Image (cartoon, rainbow, N blue to C red; front, side, top):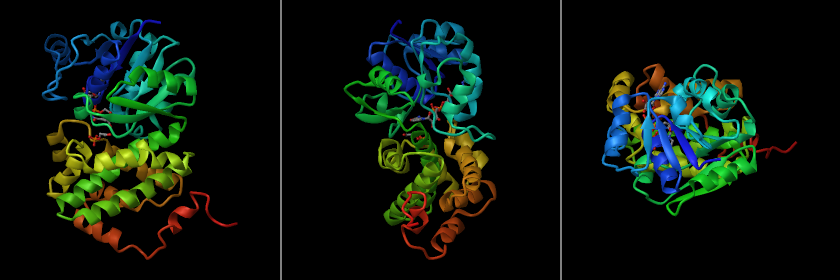
Length: 345
Ligand SMILES: NC(=O)C1=CN([C@@H]2O[C@H](COP(=O)(O)OP(=O)(O)OC[C@H]3O[C@@H](n4cnc5c(N)ncnc54)[C@H](O)[C@@H]3O)[C@@H](O)[C@H]2O)C=CC1
Ligand SMILES: O=C(CO)COP(=O)(O)O
């Protein structure tokens, strides 16, 4: 097949990954629904709304026509927000070759069904589900597009598919590891956004590094607990998609989730925060999904529960922190021993 890659949607992450593929000598076409954005990418080689100040490789083309974008593609990259994944996959499905490798780089669950993104893609795309891959890890688009050293993980049920994705993306500044734990990589990438909202909240409230460290550590316990209940490999949470992405999203100035959390701490209503951001803040919908999943899988997720109350039940952020600090006394490992298979029978 031709060394041609198609990137579905021209947000910040899709555009940055398109640049990585172009650096790796792929002929890249981005599909975007906005003609003004398409014209800007084709003529100025920029995508200023989503990646301010970044210049893209000249070779990247964009189009509003999805059939044209997907013609001859051997790699199809889905980089839509989770809320749009099914709609985008439905539109793309008729034009994707059965041999093409389908990779997604989205961090979230489908609203309502709470399905993972590879499940949504498997339902919408024809062909072998083993050709589906998730790309995740600590990777802000703003740094990737400036070719700053970044590491990610690609996970698939098929080692061969994961290696094909590794080969497509690996460049001197973008190091790609393979992994076979699709569930763990997808759950970790989604839930860390909730913890990043919390990190923004505690920073916005003026709390210090101790609070941030507590949130990251207990957040990782919560992410692992849900992931393991859903069938993930515990070790994934110690890797790039787990602790790696948690650290970058909770500490980086680039994180939209962190910024949204800090605005909430200032007292801005959620609707105003989302309008001001103008970009996707996945942690908000994910809080709702994780709240349901924690009930479904019977796992305790206290940070998620408090975030849910702040976002959707108007609980003041300071009270949420007090609730977390005032929980019943417990042994550090007590809540997690069962999910890690450590209980004595
Ligand atoms: N920006 C980043 O650094 C990273 C983002 N991600 C994930 O990538 C996904 C996408 O995020 P971003 O690119 O950052 O979002 P963004 O807010 O920068 O861009 C979203 C794009 O999706 C388009 N879009 C939305 N609904 C659409 C639809 N129905 N049909 C066609 N296009 C549609 C918008 O027009 C926009 O171009 C999210 O799940 C995010 O968590 C993952 C890693 C890094
Ligand atoms: O997933 C990301 C970095 O790995 C991006 O996080 P934000 O959506 O919070 O910017």
